[in-house]
Image: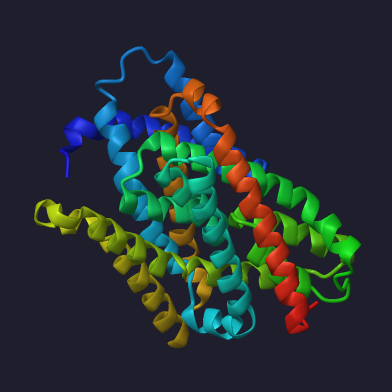
Length: 342
């Protein structure tokens, strides 16, 4: 680990940016703190002529703090609740994840999208938006510009989903007396937690359902989050296999996503503690710290991103994100209909 004397300036800058963007995210939850942070970083870096003294801290934040955020995310997962919800939603979750990753793989070849960007967009679309990108990026060794591009694509369709899905739910005939159908839909078809929350809360408000839809949607969403584990391990295996003859030169400690093991450990701690009688709310500060760390990391990624290059190369990833989003939405609706939820 780098010495604190080398990283404190860049770390402090990312921290200051994160505080501002955290509160902006609370004010405008449809956009969310991570998106504000990455945009803030991309704009600020245009005015920083010399980042040499800041760079060690910026790099530390974009890599290590991002991993710490994923680990802390595990404290929001009660495995008992997720297993209970999974009995109903797991087939839909598997179908939507397979659809998104399949579409991303096909379009990568058809549109010649860079492999790492297509992986990030596919994982972000299918699992849990920014958190999945945060977990996947270090495993495939994606650079900050690739992460920024994927986050931007996911954000764009998150906002559209949060705004349109409540109206779509009414048009296609979801029950307005129960939040179950729309909760499963939002939890499986919307990418990022903030947008899932926004869409589900809107449905609750529209139909006077209290928090019924929100509770269902968030639980389904957390169930999707567990897919981070097999996806990252699979990607690590592929990267190792790709090394082929040079495998003896590969540092397996760097490739294997050990932080995912800590993520699992955090989930187990949460589950055991709740089973022993601890209130779930005791883990709220750690969950909130996870969100804050993601915002910090996105600020650092923004600082490392060339916004001009991002705009010039963004067309194909956006089209890929659109196709993944439409595919996930369609499969979620079809699966719910076949299962009798809707």
